[in-house]
Amino acid sequence: MSYQNNCKYVLYILAIALLSLFSPEPPVYSQNESARTIAENADPIVYHLSSDDPWRASIALSDATNLRSLGHNVTLMLSIEGVQVGVNNPHSFLALGNVINNVTDFINAGGKLVVCEICLEIAGYEKDDLIDGAILGTPEVSSIMFTNATVVDY
Figure 1 (tube, rainbow, N blue to C red):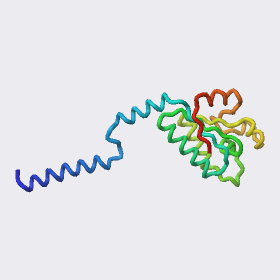
Figure 2 (cartoon, one colour):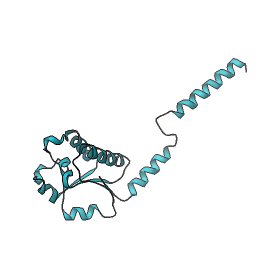
Figure 3 (cartoon, one colour):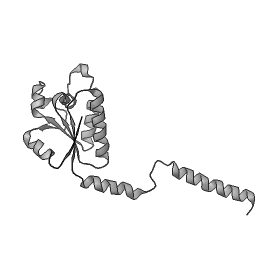
Figure 4 (cartoon, one colour):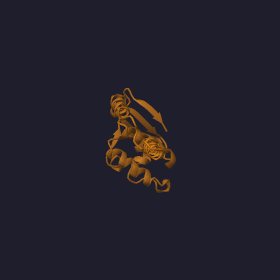
């Protein structure tokens, strides 16, 4: 083999190595399947959001959405001021429109949204004000939702 052929061969191998190194797909696919199996068999996760702050709501929703996309059984629980994220017409000065759209996407992707019944009433809303797919958080629903759950509080 000539020197020129050796250089081409080495450059070819180097290019393949670099492409695989910077590829967006992980090199070991079985790890993804193992992670999904673990997630599907894991205890439920409840993200509890008690704030109507758009930043805090966005982070809680982002975390919940990411874990849901990994296969976890995730519920977003809204209480106190957080109920604003689960209603069709939140107070306009809160600027929650984008957050509510993302909550709807979360529900449509299989996430569960539970809104505290008492908090909803205290905030001046009724069950009919909930966004599509939201579940009214009665004591019976809460009892089931929190069984064996890990709760993350925002």
